[in-house]
Length: 83
Image 1 (cartoon, helix red, strand yellow):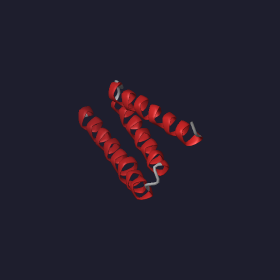
Image 2 (cartoon, helix red, strand yellow; image 1 turned 90 degrees about the horizontal axis):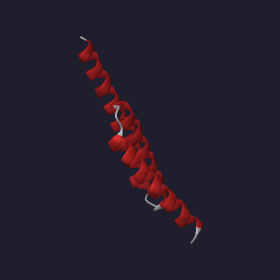
Image 3 (cartoon, helix red, strand yellow; image 1 turned 180 degrees about the vertical axis):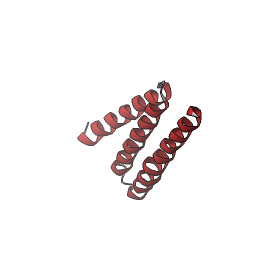
Image 4 (cartoon, helix red, strand yellow; image 1 turned 45 degrees about the vertical axis):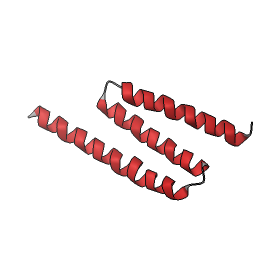
């Protein structure tokens, strides 16, 4: 077993654990944070698989844009609930 295999295995297990945490989190903001972390680990996984174009796309859209959209949506929902 090479170092590449061990790193890939660790990242795969972390992806599963963080996905499980994102699904079972009680607070929505924690779920968003877990999904962002999941997306960043997917970027690392894509880099290890030698797919830099997919990694850049995932980093920009998956981790950046979608996380920002979720956070702004949660903030807008909280503002409406307080009115």
